[in-house]
Length: 269
Image 1 (cartoon, helix red, strand yellow):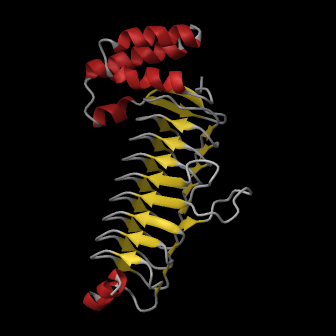
Image 2 (tube, rainbow, N blue to C red; image 1 turned 90 degrees about the vertical axis):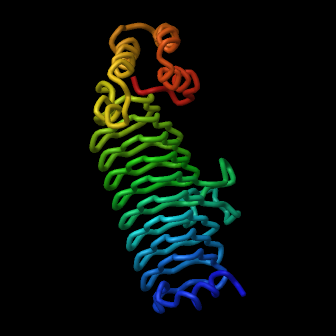
C-alpha cells in the first residue's frame, strides 16, 4: 500500500478531510495537512512537517522534515520564465524551515540548475518570493515581501530586509545584511551591510557577527578588509591583494576574497 495511504489510515486526524491530497504524493510520519490544501502527485513531504490551510504544493517538490508552511503559500509551481516549456524541473526544501503566509517558491528551469534549492532553518516571512533556480543556504531570513529574481544565490546567515528586491543572477554573501527596501543589482560581499535604491555599502554586519560568536579580533579584521575595499580608494584588484594578505592571519577573510574573485556580476561598490 502506498505510504501516504498508510499514514492516512494510521493517523486519520493529521490530514483534514477537506484537503485534496493526490494518492501518489508521499507523506512521511507525523505530517499534518490543513483544510483546503492541495498536494500534487509528485510531492514528497518529510516527517513532522505541518502544512497549513489553503496551501498549494505542486510539481516535483521534495520537502524535508519539521518544516512549517503557513496558509496561502504556493510552493513548487512552474517558473515564471517565458522559456519554460513544461519540462520536468524540481524544488528541494531542507529541514526546519518556516515559510509564512502568501510566500511563493518556484521550481527550476532546464536552462540553469533544473532545481531551486532551499537549505535548513530558514525563515521566509509573509509575501516573500523565491524565483526559479535560486539557491539558498541555511539560517537565512527573508523579511516580509523580500523578492529574489531567478538564479539568485544566497549564502548562510544572510538577512534581506522587508521589501528588498534582488535582481536575477546576483549572489548574496554569507552574513550579509540588506536594509528595508533595498534594490540590489550586484553581488553583496560576505559580512557587508547594504541599503538604498540602488543599494550601496554601509559598513559590516557587526551585530550579526557578534550574535554568531565571532570574536572581536575577527570583527576588527573584517572591518579592516571593508575599509580596504570601500574606503581606501584602491582599485578592486589592489584591495583584493591586501585582503588576501590579511586572510593569512584571519581565515574568515578567505570567504570575502574568494567571493570577490569569483563574482561574475560585480560586487556592489
